[in-house]
Amino acid sequence: MPDAQPTKERKHLMRLAALNDVSRVLVACRLDREGIELMRSAGLQVDYEERITQQEFDRRYVNYDAVVIRSNVKARPVGGKGNLRVIVRAGVGLDNVDVEGFTKLGVKVLNTPESVTRAVAELTVGLFFCLARGIVRYASELKQGRWLKSEAHGIELRGKTVGIIGCGRIGREVARMAHALGMRVLVNDVIEVPRDFLESVEGKQVDLLTLLRESDIVTIHTPLDPSTRGLIGERELREMKRTAFLVNMARGGVVDETALKRALREGWIAGAALDVFETEPPTDLELLSLPNLIPTPHMGAQTHEAQRAAGIEAARLVIRELLGKSV
Image (tube, rainbow, N blue to C red; front, top):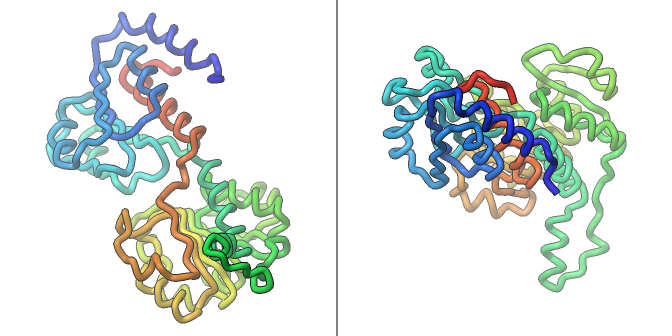
């Protein structure tokens, strides 16, 4: 049963609505209905265009005070500012938004990273288990009538080292889960990770090469920007153990897929799991068909709980920016 808080918020916002001129919001992505109703309860005019094209978005965004997007479109100031005051990305990452360009025009850019943190972290650790025990492969073999019990030798996660590249909200949640499983935790980040957090997971911050060389599982949780594009390429993959696994839950461009394909084919590493790809949906069928790769369709944040939280948080941010009221 939904909690009562959104209902209380709606009643509060309906009282505020009469005090404000009507502002227009374009929801240019799939968004939980509760978030849309919350904005409408505040007196905002909301146009819901889940299947909007890039061309249509570029043409229309200037007519709205706020837009809500995901990764389905790129937000670029191709038409200037127009009426736009705020862009909200419902989810993690802003690589599909020209933050600098819009900021120069006086448009605020926000996102909702906390809403999907748990969901992405849980899938990450789930993929650890899939790689360590060969779950996907042996389940597939059994469905085809092949009983491979004697061959299904995996490894236990306890006592293994996980290397976490990018120690923000999601990376830290993964570290907590890995520590609870009895794993040794190494982290790498461009900023200094707080000492109290590292102590809580008995972790250590190290340089990238040390992390790659010592980790049994390397998992990536960085944003995609010029400094991280191609961060994991041939040189980095060759530094990893031949028994190690790579997991990418960040953005496809962080990993050089051509180098990864060769690494998996030639045995530089034992296997990999990708939830993100350079092109989505991916078109490299050779990569997808490799037996030691587990591909998933960018589903890290796709839980009912995370989607509801992202929709409500996006709505709250829009209301705060347009009406000047915290919800």
